[in-house]
Every structure is written in C-alpha cells, then in structure tokens.
Image (cartoon, rainbow over all chains, first blue to last red; front, top):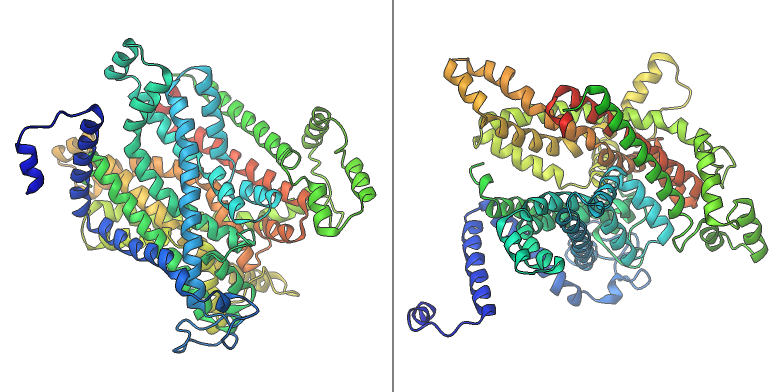
Length: 309
Length: 322
C-alpha cells in the first residue's frame, strides 16, 4: 500500500527519465499479469527456471576431477546406482555430473547465439525497413533473402570446418546462419512503423536517422523482437545439438549435444546403454519446449490480435 | 498485376542472382576465412612448406583473387567441382551418386509429414480448444522441440538395439536382387523416414492449424454458413483449400531445413546420401567434397523455392502483383 499512498500524495517533480521508466514498469506489470494467466507460458517458465538454476549452481557442486576422462572415479559403462543415479559413460564419469556441467554450456550457447542472431537480424531489419525502398534497403533485403535460401546446415558445416570447432566459433556459426528470419520480420514491422505520424512529426522537429531508428522504430519493433528471441534460443540449442552430433560441436567444452554424440559414437544404442543416450536428449527437449511455450505465450501477450486463438 | 510470363521471368532471374551469390559465398568461404583449404590440410596432415607451396600452385591459390574467381566461375559453368583430396575421384560424380538416396528420404519424409500434419491441423482447428486440439498441439510442440538426430538414435536403441526389429543403419544388404532387394531397402528406410516425418509433422500441424484459424475468420466462410452450406462442405470446399496454400508454400520453403534434418538423420543411420557424405568428409577434411555438397544442397533449395514461388503465383494470382 505504501506505493499507492506515495502516488496519492503530491507527485514529485518528475524527470523525463523517471516518467518513461514508470510507464515501462506499468506496461511490464500489465504484460506480466496477462502472461501469468497463460498456463503454457507459466509451465515453460517453471521448467526453464529449474534448468537455469541447475546451470548456475550445479557446476560448482560437481567435483572437476570426477568429470576428467583420466581421473573419473566410477566403473565404466554401468547402469544407474546410488552413487551415479544416471549410470556412467565409457570413462567412468557419472552421466548426471556430465548433464549438470553440460547444462551451463548448452544454455550459454543457446542464449549467446540467439542474442547474436537477434542483434544482427534486428540491425539489418530496422535499417532496411527504415530506409525502405532505397538502395540500402534493396541491398540488405537481398542479403536477407539470400541467407534465407542457403540451407543453414550446409553453410554451418562449411563455416565450422573452416573456422574450427571451438565454443566461440560454434556460437558464431549459429548466429551467422540464423539471423535472416528475424531480419525479415523486423523489416516488415519497421516499414509500417516509420510511416506513422509521430515519426514524421519527430523528423519535422529535426530528429536525425539514428535518433528515429533507436528511439522510435526500435521500441515499436521490440515486442516482436522479444518473442522472436525466446524462440530463437530454442532453435539455437537444437542447432548446437545438430552440430555436435555431426562432430562439429565445441570440442573444448561438455554440452548436452556432445554427451549425445559421445554416447552414440561409443555404440550406446547397440549395447543398450540407455542411461547415457536418453537423459541429454530429454533435457534438450524440455528446455527447447519450455522456450517454445514461453515464446508462444509472449506472442499472445504482446500481440493482442492472437489472444482469442 | 503482371502477366504470368513476366512473373515467372522475374522469379527465374531472382533465382539466378541467388545462385551467383551462393557460388560467390562458396568461393570466398574457403579462400578468405582464416582456415583456407591448404592450411587446413597442413594442420591435419603435417605438410612441409614446399608441399604447401606446390599444393597452392596446383589448386591455383597463388594467383590473384579476381583471376581465381574467374577461373572458378568457369569451372562451375562446366560442372567441374574439382576432385576429392582423398580418393582423387571427380566430386561432381561422387555428389551425383548420393543425390537419389537423399531425395528418397527427404521426399518420403516430407510427404508423410505433410499428409499427417495437415490432417492434424485441420482436425484441431475445426474443433479448436477441444481435447484433440489441445493434446495434438502439445504433441506437436514436443516433437518440434526434439532434436531429430537424437530421436533417430532413440529409435536405433529401441527398435534395432533392444528389439532387433530393424537393421542398425545402412542402405541395403549386399547380394540381394529384385524384389528382395527393394524390400530390404524399405526395411532400411523405415526408421530414417519415421524420424524425419516425426521431426516435421509437428511444425506442419501447427502452421496448418493457424492458417485454418485465419481462414475460418474470413467473411466468405460466414456467408457460406449463412447460405446454409453444410459444415463438412464448408470445410472441404471453402476452408481447407484456402488454408492449404500458405502451408504448401511453407513446406517448400522449408526444404532447406528438412535437408538440414536429413544430414543428421543420414549420419545417424549411415544412410548413403548427401548428408552422410558431408559427415564423412568433415571427418576426413575432404574440403572439395564438402564444397560440392554445399553447392548441390543450395542449388536444390533454390530450385525448390523457385517451384514454390511459381506454383504459388499460379494458384493465387494475387501474389503475382506483389
């Protein structure tokens, strides 16, 4: 109640910034209320929070020596038991330990690659849309359409082979191969935003291109961008898995994709070592699914026309 | 609105421009980026400096870039994709022999995923919010979120490893002839096609469903109802054909992604298509072959997109003006 009272008493002399921020807080609170009513979105958020927590806390409780190939403490390739609830791999490492350590890498790759793709896609999309119809637009739009056509896997393989499979390069490869769809969506949004009256008014008042793009076009494109980012993380995690299975994943880090690849290469499927192959796939599925459900829910929250679906 | 001929002409020109772009990317990728082919080879095979210089000369890498580009484009026009570093065979021939298995896998998988996905989407949207709709939507999302390669491994674990119902990968058992050979190929094909179908059926069901919901809100559906057209008739004649159009385009535009899925599935099932070829070539750093796969895959996707564009233009004349 303290907040409501403070509002009721004399409004403090508000600076421009504080007005903007209180407006944003209110908008966020309203969106959050709508989101909370979406059961799918909340389930997704719950599952994701669990995995994020594991990724933050988990790796520090796992003994680093226990996941070293040379110093792994357990017998090789044995089924789950009390000491290793998900069995062990071919070096005698506990699969549960690997999963915990891998959660951080998989999520980091997902988030950073998606962020890279979104920043790239949004820059290209906003610039193209803002300069819609000009030569800049036709060049950027052409580039976008080209990247949409090149099969991502072929480009990713070529890039990964040329660059070498390190954690950083894998992130770069995923970002470079997945920005184009974002750019296309953002461009069409920006095309319509820049025709609105207030943009024209700001221009008449002397606002420059950079100001118009960053202060007027970007905030209006942001809702689309936000939902897009969440879905992009899901896609990036799946891409990392694909690259890992092809032997192009990060060789200097343990990710869920790499656990799958190692178990497969060691013949886990023919030897029936299900505890080694199944858990990482389920984890990837759950995380991807939760991102997708959150993304769909956000789409509904931020895009009222979809709400009656 | 432009005439059909001009529309097709414009689309073909666009496709050709895209092709030039792909060829250029392919050229630059392996020359400008830090790991050019020779240094990759030097890394993996311990070449002396003289070997490196000879190899660079042999591959024409010591010439100016513009000159290399002209030579390269000439080779591409003649269909000369170079030779495999490993076997010395023509890359064009190696790649060509791998196209059919991939087309078979991708074609069948796409066909089944389309039929089942469209059916689920139509049924779900028609009775939106009911039990079938909710459970199929969740299942679709779950399938969309499953890595295809891992799903394939899971099938191998269960159906080949534990139950022993299907072969653990490969194309055909040696020494079979005639009908037995075809049955054997089908047996090898079953699990990969199942994996690919499941990998995409969810996505197509979601798209078809949302496209159905769009069309159901259109005025012509309301007026059909007002005229007293029976519901099954409305669904069959008015809604489904209109809803299928965008889904159809998406399926064709999606071929690039399906190809991506196919690469992993082929790698997992040792299915001797382009994907398995790429997988093996990655291991052996056989870069001319990797380049060949990249080119053929890109050209394939360009061609499919062109088909989708042209077909869409004829099915829905409104897009021709755009």
